[in-house]
Length: 205
Image 1 (cartoon, one colour):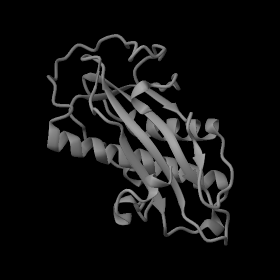
Image 2: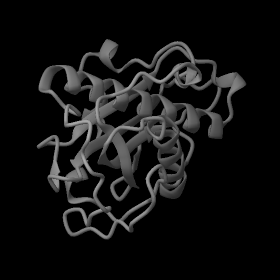
Image 3: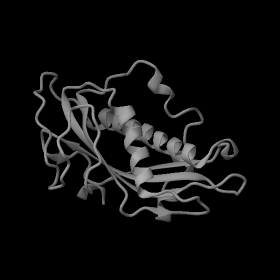
Image 4: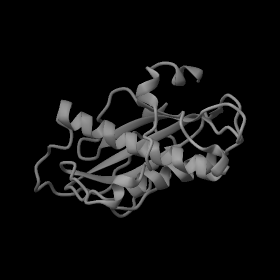
């Protein structure tokens, strides 16, 4: 999975210098008809890269699920969309030892009404924190910060797709359907605004 960290120019993968959740403190700019239905996070292929402290699949699943929920539960559009994520690789270097904190995700968005993927191929989201003070952060803070920055970049990508490909432009009076079974995967029905960790989605592989 080393290709995740060299496949794009470094500047495109750098995390923002400020807090990745700073924008959540202000008013929410609507994103068309988007409303999050299910958030399914898995990590079946998780790899630890470089000089890194350990983090379990469950820790990454919990951190990414929370970060996505905190970010996308803000939106109250008229149509459900489901987010499928596979955490692929990470690095959590200890203090002093040279290295970069990083995480790589594959992301797929599902249109509930159409019962179809929005992106034919998973979107690769990469976070590489070059400028950070690891001396003042413990392992859990590193992991949480990477998950929050990854969630922010997922929103950036979705807004770019809204602009370029017309995502989330459905009718404002769309009737919200029941939560579906996605691609045969058992994502249990949950009320809007709640998150769920589902079984692996085929689109995240």
